[in-house]
Length: 244
Image (cartoon, rainbow, N blue to C red; front, side, top):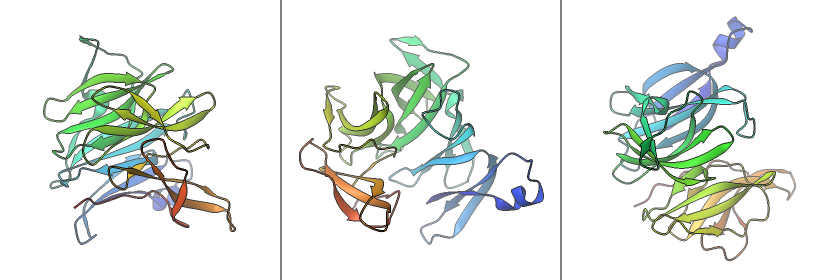
């Protein structure tokens, strides 16, 4: 497991200090194995299906992906040792067969494949977001598609669910990795979440639940664009699924 938590001791001792985040790697018994402290505001956390690697994202400036001036740090970790495998900004990025480099790259939303060496993430440069495919051992990223944020890889590795910027809101969408064909999901509201696959046919995500008391619940929706959103877990957020 991977947990991001504000280090309140720092803010209490020095209210002017930048926010600190405790990044904790947990074993199968949910006991902390490794812990580091970094500056920032917690955002995203994922562990590879085989438990070998983990990834976290914090905001360094700003606190929303809608903020054009926000800045992020996304770091990969070796769960066995707690060692950093690098900030994604340190990886070599390729686009259209050429090295793609800029000082204002921002990465977030890592999702791992079954073999853990392969992963996907979001890159933003200027006002454009891209889907990138990552190779941990080669420390290389390759741009695949535009307008993809917070991707989540299906259990069979063939599709990515993500949020797509459409006007002033994010539309839940599924991308076929073989054809790059997009399917719009039947969620009418804008969703700001890194969704999770319940199985190869259904998507889980959090959104406001207006059935009193108004708060947040986990919803489920078909991944083929059919159906409609239904409550999967009331009064719950940020699901993660362990596949057999």
